[in-house]
Every structure is written in structure tokens, then in C-alpha cells.
Length: 228
Image 1 (cartoon, rainbow, N blue to C red):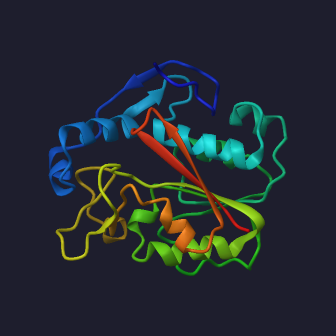
Image 2: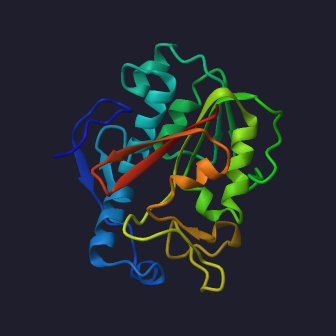
């Protein structure tokens, strides 16, 4: 059963394969793990093109924004007054977030997640999607996200999660890249393979509350972390 898209409200999806053999081998994925990660990245809403990863993230954003309708309509109707920092393009959410008057975009890796160029307590919400795994020190990057959030602010993010194992560093392993089999830019090398303990990282970075939003579990999980 396909989910309802929280971005546009549609309910029809198509499936495309996105993983390639070398990446499956590098991440030591079982056939079942490869299948649900393919769904996470390749199963898309036929109306707005959002994949399950973006849909999980949109559900977290709906909660953070207290949105009572699909995000496309919530934003178009001018109901979003939040100041939002989007780090890297959050998939098909990006063109919608860009319509918000308080939206600030920082392109990764030009924007250094270890030293965000914003004052303390500048934003209501920080968003990033499948970016943290490329940052050398994810805990420090999360603490920077917390620093620029206002009190009671929310961080909404996704990372690729392999739910049957714990997080591991790729230090000492051959370089691995996401996006395409041709990717070789070191800025996009994977430093961290996140597992079932991904939720603990924002807690360790100082956030006081964490919620998980699952779509077709284990295919897609988004994390919402609140600053006390």
C-alpha cells in the first residue's frame, strides 16, 4: 500500500532502481537491505516526484510547522512564518521551502557544517537530507545545527539508515560515494554509515527530544530533534 504524499497530497507512486552493485558491495548490504534502500531513494510520487526519503522528511516538517495540510498547500497559502535554514537541497522539498519568506539556503559542501556562518538562535527550523553522512564529524555538525536554532526550535533531517546494524565509521575502508556510480568528489565521500542508533546522535549533540517518522518501514525514516 503506497503512502499519501505529505508534500502534494497524491497517492500514486512509481518504483525505480537506484543502487548499483559496487555500492551494495561497499556497504555490505544484504538483498533485503538493498531492496528497502532502493525503495527509499527510488519509489516516487508520480505527481510531485518526491521519493520516500523526502516524504518521511516532509512528515517531520509537518509536525515541526504544525501544518494541517500537504506542505505544498500550507506554504502556498502563506501559512508558514518560520525562519528556516536548509542545508543542501532537501530533495523535492527544496522548491517548496524556497517559497517561504524566511527561507535561507546553504549549498553543501560550500557551507561548512562544522562552522555555520550564522548567529546563535537564528532559525526556527534547520533541515538537511542525506548530507550528514558526508561530514567528517557528524556530532559536531549536529551541535552547530543546535547552536543556530532558537529555543524550542526543531532540526528535521534524514540520513541513510541500515536498521539491522549499528552506526560505523568508514575510516580505514575504501572510499564510498552516493549519488551515482561516477561520483568521485571527496566532498561527497561517506564518512559514516548510520544504523539503528542514528537517533542517539542528536541527543549526544545536546538536543532534548527526538521523534522518528517512518514511511514504509524500514524503507524511510526521518528524524525530528528539538532544542530545549
